[in-house]
Length: 208
Ligand code: NI
Image 1 (spheres, rainbow, N blue to C red):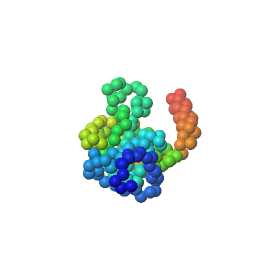
Image 2: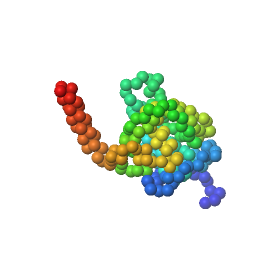
Image 3: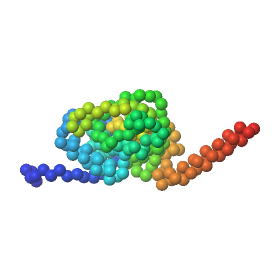
Image 4: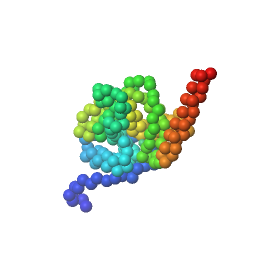
């Protein structure tokens, strides 16, 4: 209806799944982060992410090959034993980051379980850098610069990887740790009894 009223519609978008070429490509920089089309896309991305119960989403996952990510790092994902100042780097409100750049602050990596809306039903243990600084632009064109640690750093690395055509299984060093999420509980239980067995063996060794 050309010339009709412009009604802003939000929509839950279809999510591309592993194997689709849009997930393999390098996404393009956004020339004008404040453009209305960008705002409309981001609105859909946030709606899609929340509907799918995801921690983050990158534009290529909704078939839009642009350098845009949305994510959040809620306080409940931060470790409990850290002080308030440190906790700040571990959390992020719902964030829209356009044309992001990552600067690593450490060589230290840590394994953690990840899932991906483009790899449904699976979980994998993925090594990620534990601290980084990221920069980008918001929807209003403001510069964003933050230090991220822990899960916050992990989700940023995961989402920014999408912009370069990389999915988390490609970052794994042991595909034996790629499992169906329905088996996660069985996996954890098996892990624990293996660990307990190892500890017992250690104790036996200590006694010997
Ligand atoms: Ni993902």
